[in-house]
Image (cartoon, rainbow, N blue to C red; front, side, top):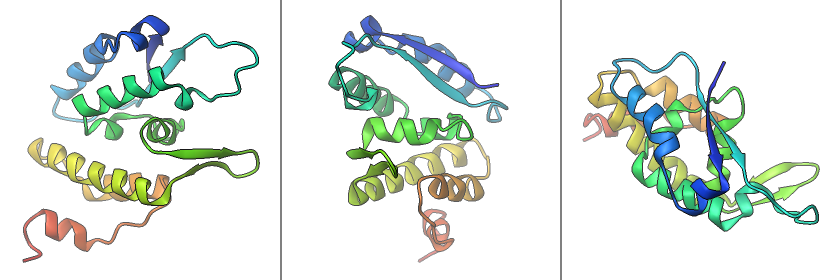
Amino acid sequence: MATTIHLTADTLQQLDLSPAETTIESWQCTDSLPETGLNFHIDYPREPEDPRELSEIPEVRLWFVRLDARYPWLPVLLDWKGGELPRYTAMLVPHEFHRTEGIQYNPEALEIFLMSKVFAIHEWLRQRQMPSKSRLMSMAQVLGYDLEAGIFDLLDGQGE
């Protein structure tokens, strides 16, 4: 079962990261990744006629931008099986919603986001002496990309 971080309108509007910090900091201090992933429950009141998704509300997106700046490697801790990685990505990458096809990210923005995460997570895992290649390749696949194995040779300094 995933660990849930509850976010309220006040938390989001005040850019208060404290609901996430306690959980994330405790996981960051361990020598292994948690067995369960992380997800967010967002309680943000909207008018009934407001058609926007949560990722389209500026206050919500800004909170996630701040969270991502604080923890750029956070996607590795998310509950991927529960769909949290695509939802988190939607908070940070321009996109559109389609009734039949679901979320459609801007392709160039998604590629930049993905590679930024690959670099940050690879380094974070390397510092903890944890394997990263399969985890990062899986993360890319969740977002619809196939990473070439050669990128890891470059990151490890073997591609020179």
